[in-house]
Length: 64
Image 1 (cartoon, rainbow, N blue to C red):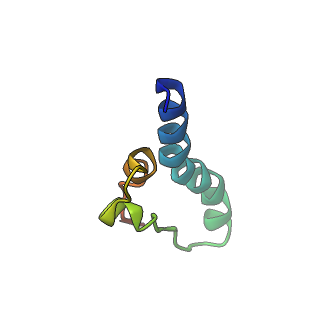
Image 2: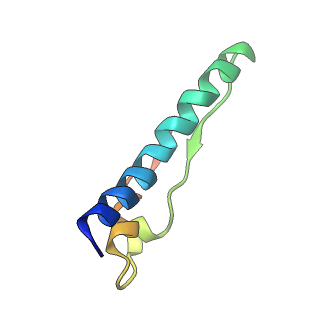
């Protein structure tokens, strides 16, 4: 894996929850409430051989 591919994988995996939540917040506010539940891949907890970038890109277990 090249450093550029690693950067792209981590950027996409880590930033996707942020971008989804950012787009959903106006709708949650307009509905006078709601919930955003972010569920990462099991790879964050268990890891998979030869898939370190994918596993490392899912570190967050968040409920907001």
